[in-house]
Amino acid sequence: MTVRALIDAHHHLWDLGRLNYPWLQGEGEPGFFLGDYRALRCNYLPEDFQRDAVGLRLLGSVHCEAEHARSDPLAETRWLIEQQARIGLPSVLVAWAPLLDPSAEQVLEVQAQSSLVRGIRYKPVTARRPHDAESIRGQLGSLQDPAWHGALEMLQRLGLSWDLRVPWWHLEEAATLLEAHPGLTVVLNHTGLPWDRSPSGLALWRRGMSALARLPQVAVKVSEFGLPEPGWDVEQNCRLVRDTLELFGHERCMFASNFPVAGLRIGYAELVAHFENFLAEDRPEQREAFFWQTAQRVYRIPLAPPVP
Image (cartoon, rainbow, N blue to C red; front, side, top):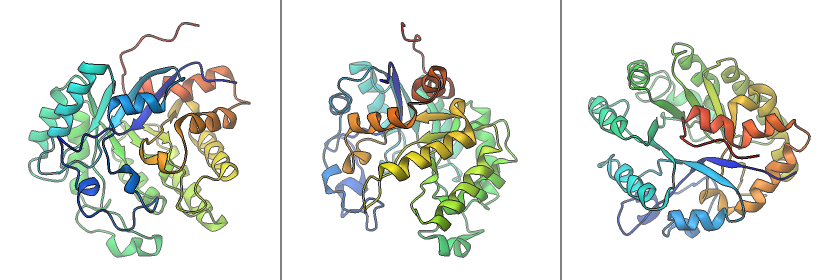
């Protein structure tokens, strides 16, 4: 089985000569979840992304904000609009705005004026380890911060979705928050980051994913299963993909590469080939939903269906 068509629902691009990414240009980020990431600290342009995806029928892509300097939340969007006009990628954008800041509405209104911006990623305050989760509960910016309700209402009012990125030990808290916002489209990043692959860790991940799956407004980017060690575990990752599909259904799951970050552990073509194998026994319409239709619908990507 080969993929007839593909939309990549989550990747990054950057030009370190034009833009400012502190985590790529400064001293680095200690404790990065994939370990040593020096290989990422160079330009990654649309042409590089195309080279990584060569040989695949890439219908389009969704660029997710790459932690550009927060002092200028519009610079990355402007640059990406230039790239889209120049080369046709990315198709649409998930931008950044300071959702819990008094300036949020002004920035959101400017971001929403772009015909390419579909959503916003702004990360909640989270604990670095599961046993520390209670220590940040209720803090400003945490998922219990009441300011989230006004922020999420703003997103919905402006027709923008929310890309939610939290590790597995905060998934149930996220579900509690989102119960109050049934009209907001939410896209969970990186399959809820199931970093703990022990039986107990996976059980807690599944419990959190189940809580989010009960909310029909939540979709999932099935992506980023890399670990510092052992790196890429095919058997484990297949199980995680199948569990996610079982919980959310193919119509709420979408393929996403997280390139170039995921490239620290696996090549692009190899990544797609693994997903092809993970879904090999599914019906053709289910595979179509996973590999491109869900992303096209959720992010409103303007493209024609592929010709049979």
